[in-house]
Length: 386
Image 1: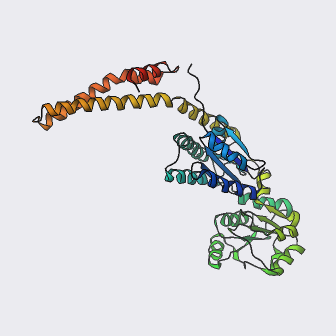
Image 2: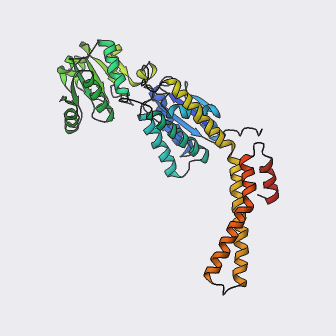
Image 3: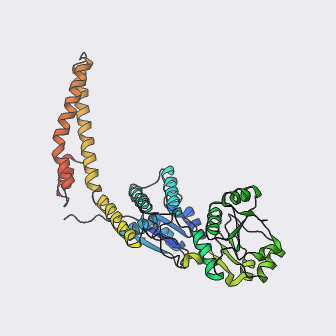
């Protein structure tokens, strides 16, 4: 059989399980500085990944890859992309956010017009697999916010009937408020902009708390922080947190809780990276990890099959283009010889030549489709000087 085509894809991967947030940020900066749009880049709360098709580009990034990061080449890189897309590599197996983030990364690369055809095909299949995996799910999707609430209960016991504060009114803040309400907690929402806090509170049956609540923060069994910037609080709030027993989960990347407050909280602070290194529990019951792994296997095989057939498709496309050029050149000569030919006759002759070319090409094109050893491909290239 024809030898498998080499897979020209390298994935440089950093994840919160092995690489701290600061190092991931530096790696992301290096990608944008060194490759300037030549890589497909996936940046999320827990990962920074670059997919390239050039060994030189991969080598340029190698010195910037932090300790704990690693390079995956060939089929390993393809399999990893599929694993990420179906949510198998997420903190919460099968969660939705990674698929949205991956789609945004692909759209960005397409908009630049620099997305290599192999990466284009890889991520088209990856996104398709991701959508299929989510279609299997029954019931509501879990998110990192659910893990945050579960981690508070793991430290402080059930939160039903107890006070929980959510700081932030963005997507993750809304999810955290919902998860806390669903767990039976009495929920308060705080945000820099009071109107946004009021909107989230109203939608979740919660109440509004000040962004810097002072001593009142001591009554909350748990605090979930989900901000796109630092959580700026005063001495009274810091003192109440230091002397109280509140569990603080900081889902923000970069961290919203200051280094000083982190030191004060000690083991009562759970960061987003800490959650990524832990066990988020099983995914949705209807979407077992075994089923996801089988989907990854099939999707990887589909990409490899596409790649192996790429040379044959290129020859087929070149052969059709060559036939069209020759046919159009002969027609141009005929039109010059018969300048008074009626339009209807021209149309009939053009249709006949197209039909004849298609009939003559049918057999070589079908042979290219069946070619598993590359013999017909090489023969057609030689005969037609393609």
